[in-house]
Length: 382
Ligand SMILES: *Cc1c(COP(=O)(O)O)cnc(C)c1O
Image (cartoon, rainbow, N blue to C red):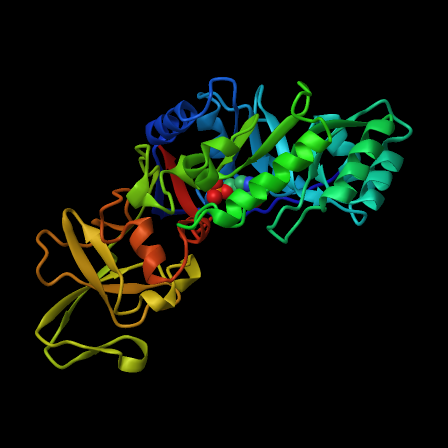
């Protein structure tokens, strides 16, 4: 199967710092919350939550990761040569519109693949029929998420079929919670009960070679009874969690995003700044231009709202964020000069420009702030 790769340029002046120690210590702390035999699946879809997927794999390999989970076959193929001993789980179910090349690649490379319907299962078997390759299949059971997955009855049929096909191996059975990150876990508990009922009905809990899994970061932290054979952990590994106030583990953010000041402006009191004149200098103001804008997913709603950090000081965004530029008020900040680096996303969870704060401001979750990191920024691994 041929995959296209792009030759996107990298901007050396936009720096995404990745802290290996933080990632590895989060990994160790999270693993510590699990039973020693519980497998750890590091979820690294969406370019490793924006950090850089191959870079993240290279780092996490030094810890103990049993699986890397990605969203699709493209990501799987992109990291296949760097995962070492770890296996790759593809979360997006195989469907009948897959090319048979892609199915064959999955089998050849030993990827573990989700399947959620009979037609797809038959299609996969047909694609592999002329080979001795065996595909590792994970059946995803729908218990309340209402996204990908099959209800219990169909799942039972899928399991039976998988076992009857010569080129397929039943490698896993899983589900996914819709509310594990909410304060109220009642629905998640109901999902868990449904899943457990299914597993015992199928006598799956006793099968040593079938990996049962359900927990994402939130469930891993809040529902230890849902760990089963493996946890699938994304956001927490990168140092962020949705319920930071009730965290039973210390997490260290693993990324900081910076860019340099490229111009300094002196605005007279009363002068306006940026498109739409949404900011008027209420005093004589020194503004610094940072070459990051909404094209870098520094969202326009941060206009007159977010802050950036220079040394230990915070500088307010003034005026509208534009496509490639944002202006900050540096009037009271010492040692401001062209070339000095400004922190746009901070790795300090208490910071006013932490991922928490930026997510809150944009009415979203940490996942979306992280996956919005510009891919053209330089990654620096520490
Ligand atoms: C993305 C994803 C995860 C990881 O979620 P986090 O909240 O980042 O831990 C786990 N399981 C599935 C099926 C996912 O799609």
